[in-house]
Each structure stands twice: as structure tokens, then as C-alpha cells.
Length: 430
Ligand SMILES: Cc1ncc(COP(=O)(O)O)c(C=O)c1O
Ligand SMILES: N[C@@H](CCCC[NH3+])C(=O)O
Image (cartoon, rainbow, N blue to C red; front, side, top):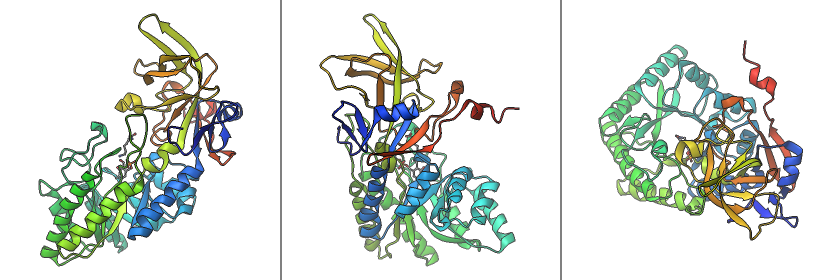
């Protein structure tokens, strides 16, 4: 269905995800409900293993901000990928299930002293240095301990991807990393090389998210290799690693083309081969950090249709029992999604509707003007490709309770995150 591996319509006319009937899932767990296809997540992890780790001797970190909870950590651990974390909360979640700490890379543009301390104490694999404030804090922490840690330095290469402004990160004007244009990256490199607290492993750049082109990674590698050449010339050092970040795109709606991992990993690795050998430099280990690509298409959200309001000649609103609290992306980035009716066969009778959430915001619209089967109150609606940046960006606005997350796997389902209760909502209130 739409080329999704996870989804099909079964004999009853119901949507099925990884062999689980969505109507039965709703009867069992209620709505709104996030459902993730475990087999699809694992298939994607294995594709990354085969097409990047094994093929190019590379390293892949799952960017945990896309979708994280204890069970996801266990899956990533069992598939042998590393983890990119950006906060002590993400790190703690991984720690709680014995995720191998040496496979964790700690990012972030404003890590606190407590976070750095935790990262050092737990001996995470790499810290990605983002600014001078952090370098100084880490040095003072490490000096006391007589410890040296492995670091990468994040640089902003000064190139712009074709994606929403809010999810571009490679341009000059960004809060992330050291600028290559104004000399701050070079000062940071100098400081790190001369410090006896750090083992400088390589440079990191992340260009943005939902990037459909792969040429942008060629540009990034070409810019970064210049620095590797300069570092060798100036300091006589050849760095072991290069980290090109994540950003690989997925299918949300019919404007999007589906990308496989090789579309990105081949061009990245081949460019690294060519550029580094071109300068007579040793080939560094290539790190990639996909988040969305691993989980995005493996997830759907199920809703129950409630109120339906038609403004004659203008618009028909079909309201669902969730909205911007479980999927902020349409309101935040004008993101497009695809919806399907999950509890009845496709019929001839179609209509153009706008799917609205139940929050007190006019902007709480999940999909504007989409064509669907005629819907009635009580029908089940599925929004597709919600596996990334939905659960992790959910909120309690309007005191909505965060939905449960169910893992579907070849006809079996299990709850991996419980639905919040009313008691959860007030438990920290004094
Ligand atoms: C440093 C870093 N790495 C990886 C990612 C993962 O991005 P994506 O989910 O687009 O692959 C992000 C988020 O954009 C990021 O900031
Ligand atoms: N949260 C964003 C992507 C940002 C990724 C993290 N740097 C999204 O939903 O598309």
C-alpha cells in the first residue's frame, strides 16, 4: 500500500500493520494510538548494517531524538547500531537498558555541566564538541579526573539543504557547531589538538533533516576534506573519523520519492574514498546518523473520528481525538501527511476533507484538503509515516494525555509505552 512494507488492507477491509488488524488494536488499546512495526525498524537497521557498516566498514548511530524509549534502545542495541543522544534524558534512557556506552555519541549545542559530567562518568564513546564554552567546561571537568576523552568537533560547513528552514543546520547562520567561515572552527581545532584532555577523532557536520538530494553530502565531504588536509599539513596529524550526520529523507505523501540507504551511503563513502585519496590522506571511518529514515515509515497513528463540521461551499472539517499534541509537525513545519480510513474498504464515495485535531488552536490541522472515503463519527483514521518526531515531540498541551505506543510484529502486538493517565498529568503538581 503506497509502497509501505508495513501496511496492507485485509479481507475485512481493515488496515493491517505488520499483520495486526488496526481495528482490533484500537479495541484493545484505544485511540489516539502510535503503532510501530518492529520488523520494519529491524529491516531498516539491517539495511544500514549491510549497506554502510559492512560494505564500507562504517559506523552508524541511530539518532534517538526521532523515536526513543527503552524498547527502541533494546532494538537498536540488538541490531548493533550506535546511538546519537543530545541530552541527559536520552542518555539516561539508554543507560537504563544497559546500552553499550562506548557506542554512544553525545551531541548538543548547549550541553550543561551536569550533562557533561554524566557523559564523562558513564564513559560515552564520543562527545561532539559544539562551542568554546563547552570545551572549557569539559577541560575543567577532565583535568580534575586526569582523564582523556575521544571527541569529534562539529562544524557548520556553510551549505544549505533543500528542506524546511527550521530543519536546516548546515548553513553559516546556525546555532550548531563552529563556523568554518569565520575562523572559529580552526581555533577550536587548535585548542583541542593542544589540550591534553582530548583525543581528537574527527570532524562532524549535520546538514539538516529530510534531505532528498544526496549531492549535498558530496559538497560537505569536499569542504571537510580541506580541513583534514590542512590539519595534516599544520599539525602532522591524520584524523581517524569523519561524521556526516543524518538527514536521510522518507516518504510522507505523494510528492515524496522513497530513498534507500545506498542512495546516501554510496555517494558519501565514494566521495570520501575519492577526496581523501586525492589528497594522499588515509581514509577515515565514516559515521552516519540516520534518525527519521530508521523509524519514520515504520509508524502510524490511529485516531477515532468525532465531530464533523461542514461549512457549505467552504470546507468540511473532520475532527479526530488527537492532533498537534501527538503530531506537531504539520503546525510547526507545514509538514504533509497521508491518511487512510482504517476500518472500512475503500469506496467510490470520496470527498475532500480537512482533518483537524482537538486542541484549542486554529492551527491544529493535521491534513488540509485531502481526498478520502466518506467518513462518519466513530470511524478509525490512520495517519501514515508518523514513526519519527511524533512521539518524541508530543506534549501535554490542553492537558492531553500522551498516547500509548504499541509495537506490532508479524501478527503480534505489545505495549511498549503506556498511555498517560490523569494521575500522570498531575503527579508533579504541588
Ligand atoms: C546531529 C544530528 N544528527 C542526526 C540527526 C538525525 O536527523 P534525521 O532524523 O533527519 O536523520 C539530527 C537531527 O536533525 C542531528 O541534529
Ligand atoms: N524534529 C524535526 C527534525 C529535526 C531533527 C533534529 N535536528 C522534524 O520533525 O522533522
